[in-house]
Amino acid sequence: MSSSNHYDVIIIGTGAGGGTLAYHLAPSGKRILLLERGDWLPREPSNWLAQDVFVDNRYVSEDTWYDPKGKAFQPQIHYFVGGATKLYGAALYRLRARDFGELRHHDGISPAWPIGYDEMEPYYTQAEQRYQVHGVRGEDPTEPPSSAPYPFPALSHEPRIQRLSDDLTAAGFHPFHAPCGVMLDEANPPFSQCIRCGTCDGFPCLVHAKSDAEVLGVRPALEHPNVTLLTNAEAVRLDTNAAGTAVTGVVVDHAGLRDTFAGDLVVVSCGAANSAKLLLASANDRHPNGLANGSDQVGRNYMFHNSQAVLALSKEPNPTVFQKTLGVNDFYFGTDGFDYPMGNIQMIGKSQAEMFKGEKPLETKLAPDFMLRDVAGHAVDFWLSTEDLPVPDNRVTLERDGNIKLSYSASNATAAGRLYHQLKSMLGHLGMHPDHLIPRHAYLKTDIPVAGVAHQAGTCRFGADPASSVLDVNCKAHELDNLYVVDTSFFPSIGAVNPALTAMANALRVGDHLVERLG
Ligand SMILES: Cc1cc2nc3c(=O)[nH]c(=O)nc-3n(C[C@H](O)[C@H](O)[C@H](O)COP(=O)(O)OP(=O)(O)OC[C@H]3O[C@@H](n4cnc5c(N)ncnc54)[C@H](O)[C@@H]3O)c2cc1C
Ligand code: SF4
Image (cartoon, rainbow, N blue to C red; front, side):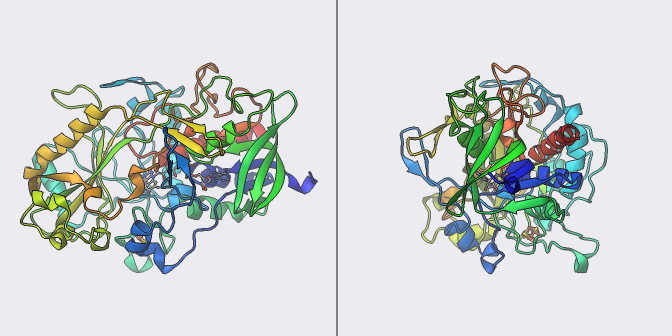
């Protein structure tokens, strides 16, 4: 290996975790190599075409994964500089303070994190500032304490959503302005980067106004001459020294050619499934079950939320363009008669006519007055998110061909069902057809891939005990001196809010530790 292939730090993966860490470490002056298996996401008119993005899956990778029965499927995953954040909805929530402690759920226990909310709080504040989160404190009854206001004002509701907010308030609930990472300046529209379009959630941003890890993580990092990015560079294996105590080589498939790089510190941030895959594929004599896997926890406890994308029908038309401005957490920790956490309700990107099935779907029988075109014009789209619990048998393993095998059974179905029925029971008060709350995929040609692997987490959880966790509190592998993991793999539990801000905040926290370690 030539000395030019040696770096102080190698970061594998440039998404919410890796891209944020790169930004944080860049000013240190250390030689940093970013390895990204994908390319830059092309800026092209297709970025904003529902047919291309939702129906033709233009930006979904061609990976093959397997289900537990060995059946191949194409995961809804995106390999680009910036990772999943290139397509994400940019709802940038903090976990609730109680999510860091042990929480009793209907189906079992959501375990405590090895650090408390107070330790993460300063990094949440920094992450909100880096990712330009728009929001307002004090509206959400479950909001954790914060040391600073949101750096930007909340996005205004459009009239139908404002009415929804008013109706919810009148019914005694506490709707809030959802924390949102889009660079919208409503006070000065001619100079606003974001144009508040209807193709945000699940689409790339053509004008780079979404707070994603490419635009606000990787690009600013690359302004530092000590940072190098290799695209189309997939890490396929980590080699260790003979004792198995340190990673000595990162073997990379770079546009079809094999290359090996060395780093004093190696940070894996490939997303929860792919980080587990890389560690499992790096088994050697000292680590026969996969790298850093003496605990047998690598790949286990895969979580991705028990989520439901549902569609209600407004009595009045819903011409909303940017719908993702409202959230409801009144049922996050339960409700009268159900003393277990239920989860978060938020809006998702407004469904559009092009996304609807051409033929008349069965479900319109439920709303006989509505022709399909009326459904598109009246749809109000909600996303219900219930915490799924870390279950050891929900796991990533490797199939014989080296690809990912994903075994998963949902937990907390009762809580998810309660949340659905709770919202359904409220529709009559919200100007919507009372009996009509149905899965969006019944109407759409293909649904937004949030129900796929979008919120994947777990697989390399952090903890104090090496027998039951993969990483220590600094997200360093217990068993190796120079190996870290900073994507959502480290989550011991996932809470019921979107995960990206927590991955970003944690990357900043781990980044502080690494800066200290690098001297
Ligand atoms: C459609 C959609 C909507 C979403 N909406 C929201 C939302 O509104 N709010 C929210 O908080 N979260 C949302 N998410 C989830 C959020 O994007 C993820 O939680 C977050 O990006 C996870 O960060 P990560 O660093 O773990 O992984 P990623 O961001 O996925 O980054 C992993 C990176 O590693 C690269 N990689 C993988 N394997 C290798 C390898 N072997 N070698 C080199 N590189 C590799 C990948 O290409 C990728 O760039 C959404 C996701 C999707 C897909
Ligand atoms: S709403 Fe703003 S950030 Fe989102 S895609 Fe449109 S212009 Fe980009």
